[in-house]
Length: 102
Image (tube, rainbow, N blue to C red; front, side, top):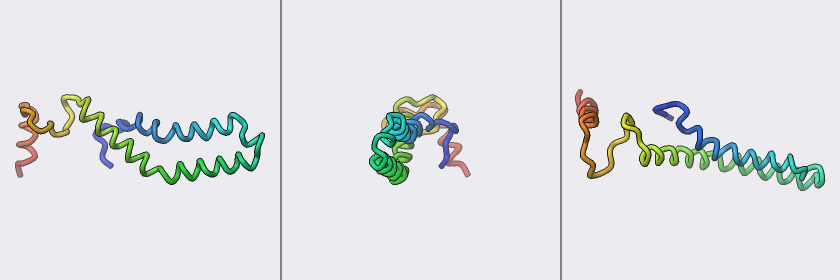
């Protein structure tokens, strides 16, 4: 996937990937596996399967949230097209003419 600035999706990756893994660490930390070994192993296996099964959805959500953050909090040098009905600026008009030229 193309990213204009590598690392832009880092925040959304942390939310989507690292927080569920933090839940697994909490299960280990609070000792569910020590007090109830079979329940702890079952819970850990369920959490691993849930993390693997939902990975594409979580990554897609991270990319979608990154896109929405670019739309709503855009920077002036962002190449996203302007919203419908917006007046083109001189820089966006120049960029559009560069794209249409052979």
